[in-house]
Amino acid sequence: MDLESRGIPGGYVLSEQFREADLAQAKALGFAAMKVFVEHPIQDRTDGEMAVIAEGVFEEIMGMVVE
Image 1: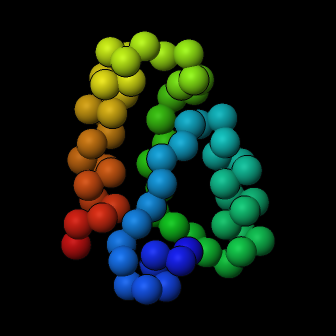
Image 2: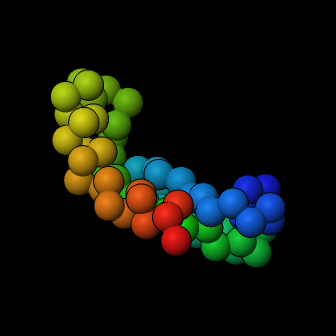
């Protein structure tokens, strides 16, 4: 919210497991940031697996910050 309030495009990446929590937080704060959801879990992924996940959402992530 801070970045957006200063005119800096932003967003965040989170795993599908947190979709409902994200919706509740956005509603509570009155803020609908751009976001990208990835498959869950991610904490035990290898670097190679994370690279594949990141490559799969790269365009979406760039869309959050490039106007």
